Each structure stands twice: as C-alpha cells, then as structure tokens.
Length: 370
Image (cartoon, rainbow, N blue to C red; front, side):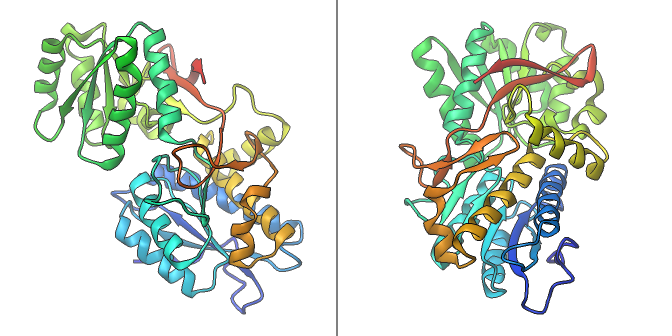
C-alpha cells in the first residue's frame, strides 16, 4: 500500500506546487528507524524551503512513497511519481532498493538524488540522471578496513546473509585487507545457528566478527551468542553498515550492543548549520538525530538550490549536477565523477568509525576518522 503524500506539502494539490518524490522505508522488512530519520530530515528541509518562499514562489510538495525495502516496489513508485509530475525523486536508505530506483529513474529520464545508499554500482552503466550524497561503499568500507588494521585485527570473519550489498561489502574488505596481511572468511548465517557461528569463529581463530546481516534478525541473537561465549571474550564485533547507530539497537541489546564499531557519515564536529539543523531534528524525532536524518535534510536542500538556480524541469536539474555548490549540514557539497562510480557523487562526505561507549551506551566514541 502506498503511503499518502507527506503533510509537509499535502495541502498543495492544485498543480501550483513543485512536487518532489521521496522514497523511504517506512514498514518492515525495511529498516523503519532509518526511514523515520530520513523522512524527518526530508520534511524539515521542505518546511524550511517553504518558509523561505518556496521555489520561485511556489511551495515545495513532498510526495512520499514507502519502499519497505522492496526493489520492485521502489521501481513501481518511481513510475507512479513520474506520472504525478515530480521534478525529481529523492531519498532511499537500502542500497539494493536504491539501485532499482536509480535504474528506473535513468530509464524514465527523472533526476534521482540518492540520500543514503552506498553500492558503488548504483546503476549498471554510467548515467547523468542520478547523483548521490552517501559515500561509495569502496570508499567508506575501505576506511573501516584501515580501522581494523590499526586496531590489530587481521583475521576477520564476516557473518553474512545473501545480498548484493553484503557481497559487495565483503569484497571491499577482502580487497583492502589481503595486500596488508589480513584475511576474510565468510560465515553463512542462513546455514549456521548463532552457537555454530561461535564455534566457527573459534575454529578460524578470528580476531574480529563483522555483522553483514539485517537488524534485528539475525544481528541481535548473534551478538548475544558471541558476548555470552567465554571463548570469544577478546573478539571485536563490528557492524560497518551502521546497525548500532539507532536507538533501537541499544534498547534491545543494552550493554551487549556497546563497543561495536560502525561507520557514521558525520564530521568530528558539526558547524553552525549542522548544529542548528541537528537541534531541530532532535525536536522533531524526540531523540538524537542519526547521520541519516542529516542526509535527508541535505538532499532536499541541494535539490531546492538547484531548482531555484536552474529551474524545475527534469533536464535542467540533471544538467546542473556539475554546478552544485551547496553548504550542507556536514560540509560543502559538490558533485564529481570519481573513477569506477556510475553516478554523480559527493566525494566525499566526512566519515568516522564510532561505537557506543561501554561505560555509557547512549554516548558515541570516535575511534577512527577517514
């Protein structure tokens, strides 16, 4: 079932508004908490655009569709949004879903600014229609591999579910670690119980276990099993995809969820704009905003700037990617075409490796900066 248009523009339905499509995971099996943060950032930025006079005097209307982590549903949503006359499509958190949306946007000639997905090959062939704010997986996960090496962790086990995203992440880790004396062994969580996975970690002499799996299942039972196994007291549990970023992780796992390093796309310190937006996002969410909420705000702010400067036509938006120069919450945003990346890319957003402090699980510690 499609989500109705968001309240941030739902009253403007007479054709006078500038419509912006938004793809967000709002129901399971999508990562609902990430979707809620992404939508909060999108909606806050739309409200601020409209409070400042809109786009050429016209209100910006956010037309939201729930992808529920389903690639086919996302592709169908892009079709529907195109028929509704949106100037562009924004958002999405899940990489495989964003890839389906990007392919459809490219085929239809609709600009798509992807907020959060990181797969390097967001489209099969190079395209002018798609741009992205999140860093490519090869860049961010390479920084995570550097963190592992710096922490003296070279025998890496990855608990994996079948997915193009997880397979790509494992490949990045292996390619980065192997020349530096590291090894990566893959453990199939569909074939191993959490207890059998613990046995495999002991057999392989792993010094780190990375969770390349969904949350809460099977990530939570795996963490509990490893934390409860005295043979594995010295092993590092990591989650490069960012599962511990959200409050649900700490609520479900408590102290067991602390000390699990993950990638976060924030600078060491936010500037005045980031601080202001962060405060408003906190009020809207009722909790500390994740980096995903900032990605949402930055996405709308970039598109609004483009449409004010170059018009609301789809071709005009696409032709302007190379001219974007916007102050985002996490630094100046410009798009380039890095080698091996098929879309226009912000190269690069700030990247940290952080974890929840075991002494105070609601507090984040910065462990490494890329």
